[in-house]
Length: 280
Image (tube, rainbow, N blue to C red):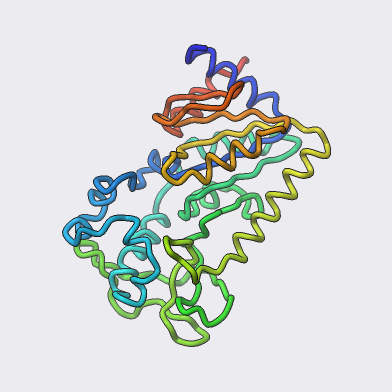
């Protein structure tokens, strides 16, 4: 099946479905101008001091830095928090939200991104699962309790030439220890998961409701690569045995299971091309 036929088929699925699930990986944010951390070269281009230190993204996204070098840890995560706050989500978010709002079965978003872009774009808070947590929420780094709190009012002062945060660094209100983002990092045994688990419970109930009603579902996956395959596995798990079709939009890894649809574009262009292919 050629590209134009795939676009037309995806457009028909998207128009006719009773509900919409958007699943998104790191590639979703690239069209909004967010850095691509794929491979060391992409990470080091965005964070030159890490290149000088020879520290990879996997090594930097590790909770031990909050004990070993708090200024560097909050330089990295503080810069990202500040960046995500000022980033404007690309048009693809709006186009998907408009479609989702029209569906009788509603919409849901599942993402491995911690950037809060779905909320900024207007997706309802109770219609989003952030499986790796959110940089817009904090927790104690010890942790002294299971508390998770909103990062509003926390404005890290980051020297962007060195990616180091200046004092005062965010602190836990209960015990005074260093605070950290409520983000699932690598080798992370202290992440507090109950906020994400509550989101996952809502997602599961939504899917169960669609299944009971016999509703059809369009799953639009954007920018989800194979290196960390959580989003791809979730998309394929949802459509397996369900009345659902997967539309996988990815410039490289667009291969799909049989009878589903692969679109070889970036997130914003891909969803725009699909919508432009909708019958009038």
